Amino acid sequence: MGELVKRHPSQNFADDEQLQYLTFLLGGETFAIGILNIKEIIEYGNVTAVPMMPDFVRGVINLRGAVVPVIDLAMRFSRPPSPVTRRTCIVLIEVEAEGEQYNIGVTVDAVNEVLEIPGTEIEPPPTFGAKIRSDFIGGMGKIDGKFVIILDADKVLSVDEMASLTSIDNPASIVSD
Image (cartoon, rainbow, N blue to C red):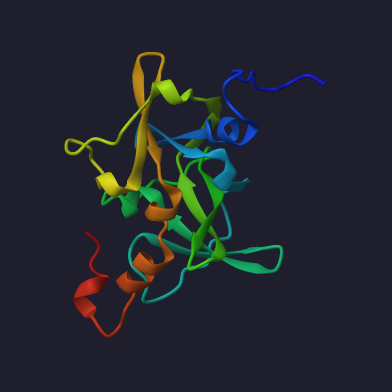
């Protein structure tokens, strides 16, 4: 049976899967998230706004009967909101919190492709100089001489952290960083 992605003999199957990333554009920059976190990609639309949420929460969508929150990833990174264009997508990502799985949608400007980035081409996150919090960064992948920011989905979309930002008991926590 043919392989879609060539495997290096020293890598086992699980390690190889972790090296595949969905790349997407956000504010003119290329980001990546591990393909194992991606559930599906859908066209942007029918987002219902929810009152009293942080600015980065666009609202919720009905996905086959399930209510799924939608996060504006640009605003999560303290950037201006992403404009909705015909290429805007919602990427459904599965994250884990306290042993439970949650689906969260994130808006991105455009989805690029799935790439394999060898472990030898991934550098540790920078300690300074990035435009987003370094704890959100899983690594810096090198592709064609350029860096791609590999996001740590569980930290970027931390259910606990986002819940703390919506706390009504602490109005100061509603303000995003």
